[in-house]
Image 1 (tube, rainbow, N blue to C red):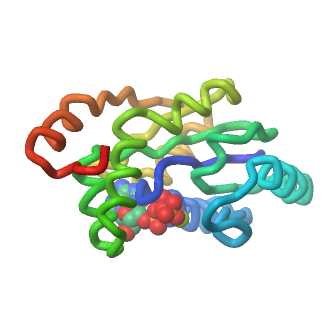
Image 2 (cartoon, rainbow, N blue to C red; image 1 turned 90 degrees about the vertical axis):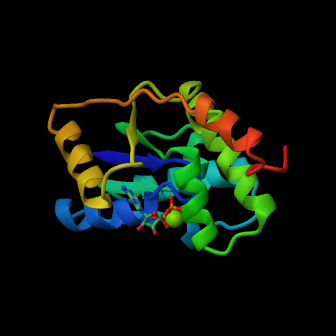
Length: 170
Ligand SMILES: Nc1ncnc2c1ncn2[C@@H]1O[C@H](COP(=O)(O)OP(=O)(O)OP(=O)(O)O)[C@@H](O)[C@H]1O
Ligand SMILES: [Mg+2]
């Protein structure tokens, strides 16, 4: 089984995939071990295809999964309410520009929209008010046949962030 975990930076992909890897006893491929900064999507697709062929059961995680088509059984997209995501990215010490860019991408469903063109089995998980352990738990339940995808609408939160001047780079 090949499990993809995608989502905007800060939604918890790496944290959740590590927990999942231990729980399921299968390896995880981290995008950040192979790519950083500006990358060619063609190179990403080729590398990931090649890596995925090496394992029968594997987890792969990274935000670029939304932008390339890969032979995955499931694509989980982690979602986080934009104001909470902003807090997580501030803690990382990201520049204001980088924070706003990622918060906007989350608020406007960037990853989901890109992934919908490429994958049939997309499950969204809202991580806003839960723990990484419970997110991993939901993923396990899903691959065992009990799948629930969350619907999110971050537009009202985005409006508040813009009106209150918390997002400036638009
Ligand atoms: N429910 C949750 N699920 C996942 N992460 C959470 C949750 N609640 C809080 N966090 C925190 O959010 C942060 C997410 O960091 P993490 O590095 O896993 O994100 P990422 O999606 O891999 O980001 P990047 O794309 O930059 O690698 C961590 O500090 C984690 O502890
Ligand atoms: Mg990560």
